[in-house]
Image (cartoon, rainbow, N blue to C red; front, side, top):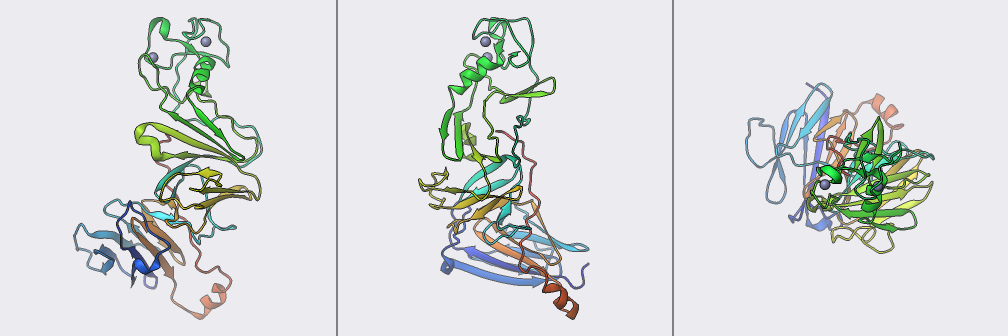
Length: 362
Ligand SMILES: [Zn+2]
Ligand SMILES: [Zn+2]
C-alpha cells in the first residue's frame, strides 16, 4: 500500500447523452466533481455528475470506475467495460505536441473511428503487410477468366473461393484486375482514398481474402500502391457493419500537415455532423506521425487500454462516454522535489499503451 501517493480525480460531465460525445466547447453545460484519495475508491455516476466512495463493498450498476492501488500505482477500471479514450487536446509527447501514432491505434474524430492500419516513416519501397493471409494455390489448371494455363511466380493460379471444376482457378493478376474495377479511387494532393463494397465471388458468393501467402510471400488482391515517401494508412471503420471498406493512403512529408475535417478544404474529408469543419491534423516529425486536435467541438481521441495505470507524477486525461476525467498523482511536497521538480515538465500527459488485440480486417 502506498503511504504518500495521492490520486486527484477531476471529472466533468456534459449534461446531454449523445452517442458518447462530449462537447469541448460549451463549458457552461458541465458539472465538475473533484476528489482526492490514497485508498481504493469507487466513482459512482449520478444523473448529472459523479460521486465518490471508499466503501469498496458498494455494489451498483451506477459504479462508473473501480480504483485500486498497488505498490507504486493506481489502477483504474470500468466495471461496465466502457472504453477509455485518451484526449489528444493539450497532449504533449516526448518531443512534439500531440499523440504519437502507432500501427494498430484507434483514433476518434467526433464519433468517427479510424484505425491506423500501417505507418511507414522511411523513404523506401516496401512490401505489403500480412493481413490474415491464406495459402491457396495450385498448378496445372486453367484460369476461368482468360482460359490460359500459364503461370509464373508473380502471376500464380489461385483458388480464392469455393467454386470447383473449371471455375476453380483464376490468375492472381486476372482477379486483381477484376477487383480493381470494383474499387472507387479518389486521388488528392497528399491523400488517396480507396473505397469498395465487400468483394466476393459472383458465383459461390465466398468473400475473397484480401491477402494470401505463397511460399512466405504475401500477395495483396487489392493493388494499393504505397508512396515511396513516408506514409500512413487509415481505415474508416464506419462501414464495417454494412461490409463497406474505406481506406486513406496518406503521404507524409516533413513539416507538411494533413488536415482532417468535414469541410471541403481538408485532405481527409469526413462527412459526419460530429466532425468539425477542421477537426484534427496529422504531422510528420522526426520519424513519427503525430495526431493533433484543432480545437474541435467533440474532440480528437485515441483508444486507451482497458485498464488505466497511473504511476507516480503522471497525469492522464481520458473521455469516458459523456464524461472527461483527469487523474493526477503528485508526490507530497518536499524541498528536494522543489529542486528536481522545476526541471521536469509539469502537467505532462502520458499516453497509455494502446490496444492492438483486435484483428485487422482491412
Ligand atoms: Zn487469367
Ligand atoms: Zn466462387
